[in-house]
Image 1 (cartoon, rainbow, N blue to C red):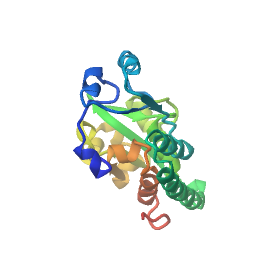
Image 2: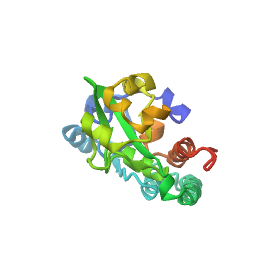
Image 3: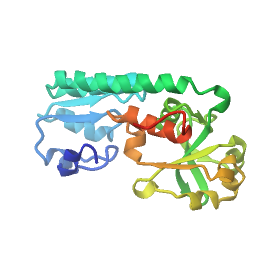
Image 4: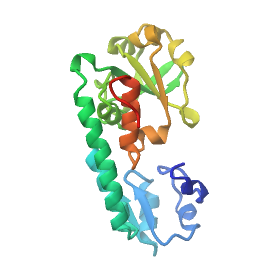
Length: 232
């Protein structure tokens, strides 16, 4: 989806469900795969092919994003361009961190990221998830920090977490709307329901931790703290 040139490239499947035939069918000179791509059996086949393959680390921190840019730049022989992009992204992270630090802890919003709903149960982003990392960068508090990764959350736990804001993706089959969320009994009992505090953002933009990560974190922060942090 981003940048625009990516929309003109052949699609070879979801990163975690790759097929070696599909990847090799586009006759690549180089394969870049983000850490976590697979399955491993397919990666093994690709590694045994004549095509060079680079696995790009996916540390979901500002430092990790900068290293990802550097790694891709090195892999494709664009080190100079990568350094320029790194500087821009680093400046974005630094500026946001300074503004977020000015928000008192007492005013920090508790944010619950809902990945999906199944049979009325919420799959949420806990600690050590990409959602947790983005919420933290934006100056929020993860309301689901008591669990790890993306896991279902019981109705009792949703109520007990007392989120001030519900955060969702507006992309593909994970798209949810405020009516669907706040119609559920557990969510009706949250502070977020009282003020209809609901934020929807593009999935890759929000959780991709690519070169737009600093801007995505700023946009989320601006929605959490309007008047204090401005989007750019």
